[in-house]
Image 1 (cartoon, helix red, strand yellow):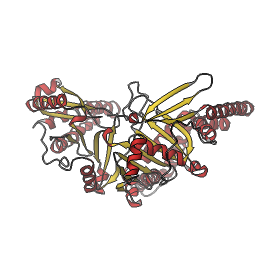
Image 2 (image 1 turned 30 degrees about the vertical axis):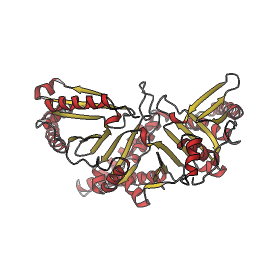
Image 3 (image 1 turned 45 degrees about the vertical axis):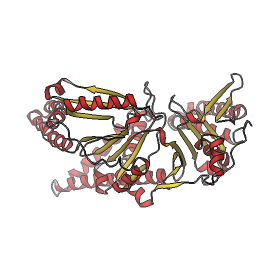
Amino acid sequence: MTTTPEPPAAGVERRLHPWSWLFVLLGSMRQFLVPLAVLVVLGGRREEGLQLAAAGIAVAVLAVASVWRYFTYRYRVDGDSLFIRSGLFERSLRQVPFSRIHNVEVIQGVMHRVFGVAEVKLESAGGTRPEAQMRVLRLEDALALERLIRHRGRADAARVAADGGEDAAQTLLALPTSEIVRLGLVSNRGMVVVGAAMALASQVLPENMFRHVFERMWQQGSGYVSTWQGGIAGPVLAATSLVLLALALLRLFSVALALARYHGFRLQAHGRRLTVERGLFQRVRSSVPRRRIQAWTLREGVLHRLFSRRSLAIDTAGSQVTGDGRGRQHEPPELAPIASPQACDALLQELLDARCWPPSHWHPLHRRAWLRLWLGHLPWAIALVAALAWNVGPWGAAGLLWLAWGGVLARRHARFAGWHLGERLVAVREGWWSRHWRFAEIDKLQALQLRQSWLDRRFGMASLWLDTAGAGAATPPLRIRHIAETDARALYDRLRGEVARRPLRW
């Protein structure tokens, strides 16, 4: 994806690539492959013919619809907008201004590379689907369209070309293979994928299959233990070895997934846009304007600290979760999936004002914030004690040990947590076992909320919740929790004045 193609001609309608119908067909069939395979494999012999006939009819219908889409889909660039015309009986004409597009993705999988094509997704802040999804264009046309949107129209593209700075890119971060291996070791993506596969299998496969498999494994394990003559140490050692082997395999799987997803990761600055390119089998090139960044998140888990690494992610105006819970519109680019703390700080200093990060001073929480945090563990301890007492009797009181562990976590959390307010930036840090830093520019704040529960009033503390466009369920909220009530009210009054005085930039 390093070609510099010519921009599409103005006002001239274009079709998709002649092979686009094949990619649309394959994309439509993908969601039916698992149910169809289950029906064919597990169905009875009498039903096989009917199932195969139904599958053939479904494939034929999808193929006709895909070819239909190719002949009725047109797009053209006119001015600083993209116009898309589609439909035969019910026609639609959609105008997408370049200034509205927040994220551009150019996707090229293995089959795309074979045919020399790419898929383009254009996403904005509104809606639950991309503004436009072009499957597929010639690679040169896809890169030309991405370049045109990156410069927000022909005028800016021509000006940049005249200045001799066309597509001048500054590489901000590049991940070698060794870093991606570390990313796989610290992530839990392999465990998530395996868990999702098992959940899907439990829904698709016959109801009693999993129960029979586990019962057979239990019987074989019990028989092996009953023949062991070395006491309890042998079976315990064998079980521990199996658990460690399973964890090692999951980590290796996570490393493989990380290599497939982040191979060749490169973060570049193209003028006013940040571009991320990554992927081994499927290359993805994602572009987002700097001004669309609403908030930042630094993460540092236990395994991150073991390797002295952190991750840096962003919220954009188009990454929010819809109110009906149908999911995330798109995932904004990860600026640094893994990097050293020094590299993350340098990246933030490059993208923000160098004086903004790292903060020179963090304000502590309320002196009894640890107690307020510890009380949050109380319901879990009660539920655990009740469940254990129901099953093992008086030994269930051992569940109270959770309160002791909760006290350790609360004290460590309260000692590490803090907040900072500068001229341009408001920042929060939280956690201990797993830490994160959340921060945003003040002129990106949309709403403020001062919260006090009855416990907060009892302790003389309050919390301030800050809202920006694009915060999703996958990111921790931007909030300053459990600080002294007087500090919270003073901070609220100051930020309220700043938000009212400054224009909103998003």
